Amino acid sequence: DIQMTQSPASLSASLGETVTIECRASEDIYSNLAWYQQKPGNSPQLLIYDANSLADGVPSRFSGSGSGTQYSLKINSLQSEDVASYFCQQYNNYPFTFGSGTKLEIK
Amino acid sequence: EVQLVETGGGLVQPGRSLKLSCVASGFTFSSYWMYWIRQAPGKGLEWVSSINTDGGSTYYPDSVKGRFTISRDNAENTVYLQMNSLRSEDTATYYCAKGTIAARWAFAYWGQGTLVTVSS
Image (cartoon, rainbow over all chains, first blue to last red; front, side):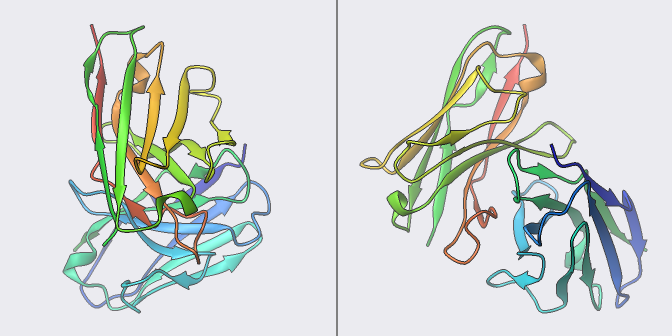
């Protein structure tokens, strides 16, 4: 199985800041990676697919990058509505696997 | 508008069975793979199952293989998850999900989830 190591586990940043969340795969996943946002009490929402493609309706301050085994999600100009947990997920191989999540808070 | 509505969750004793349903609307159901993903209380996400468009191919992680069965009824726009030999570690909110044409393997749409609690 492909292990997805996500960091940091938690993150506190100020409004307007830029934050970056990292995800490392245990083997090459050829950009078959998605990022999700989950606000408390809600279902997850797709942000990014294919490592760097923005999902429909997602604000452009979210961006994804990376290749091979290393991937990142960047949030520019942090806003209060970005308080959530974020998860990466690989879909290169079965079983599909998720990172353990990053909880983002506002300072 | 895409809608996925899960039902069938509840409290069940260890070793017993439960069948979840997910009714889909707002898209051509028979054209999309469907997925189940679960989330234990306060924990992360775990992919549980995938089914292809005609139901002929299904996939599971080892944690549920042999106990869970995914199926679909394209005439009823419904995907099911039959869960047998339930364990306490199966306690979770179960979501059904689908991709899009551009993002076939990512979970672009999610239902609201249904809570399964396995406890005596």
